[in-house]
Length: 333
Image (tube, rainbow, N blue to C red; front, side):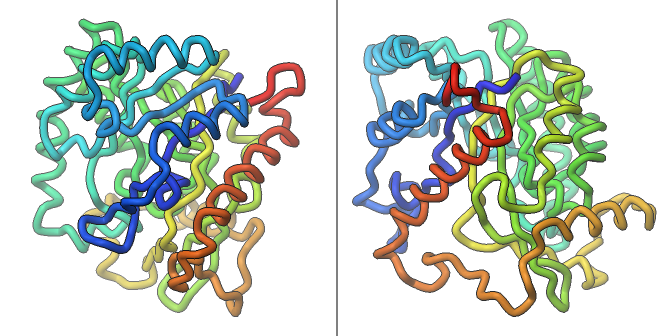
């Protein structure tokens, strides 16, 4: 049921989206062409494309890319920025030229579930999201597209469902499978609640390392961590005969979710002990021992090994998805 491919966010250093200079970009990054070449190697069926790459291209260039992807059998998804950051005109323009049916957008810059760090803006964020969804949801409907909002370590499952109701039938969810842990929800419970509204999958996984303040979410190949993919995909299959999906290892920096600090919970709705226990129980799967060095080459300052580190993890992720049966020999991705 999954049309598996790639997005660029597990390859941020290699592709040039992240570097140690200012602004945070790697000027020697390989860019869009290398991204397409890797997707071709892995026989990707879905290609989620960084919207600034497309904004920098002329209309003719984007339409040429559309024809190229069609010839490669890749379905394009336009990957925009934060919904609260401003108009989505560039993303919609790219989607029209690519004939992309899905426009993915994150909602806020909040990470690690840490609403408290953004306490002065949290109410403003919620209001801005609702205003934007009322504007862009109907526009997506008129164009025959889906605006797919991502659970980007900021909102829980019930909140995402409520946002979709605000935006109307053309607003759905880009489900990042690893991002239930940052908001204190178990992957399967989260999946059950949002399943009818999921339109696109980010296949992300984490190994969880418990700390004195909560737990640390450590990047790993998809299938090597805590996310129970077989069960999760089975739930989604009850609602969708087919979904576009992309493998996306986590960020080069571990995410520290400090839920043992009382102030971390500021801004959250009440949660039952049973609900949170399900999250903690799920986090035990393939748990990273407390004394293991969790750091990536980026965190160790070892840029020399970063490109091979990212590429090796993407290829292992694809191999794991094949072993799970999500990628078949007859229809490889």
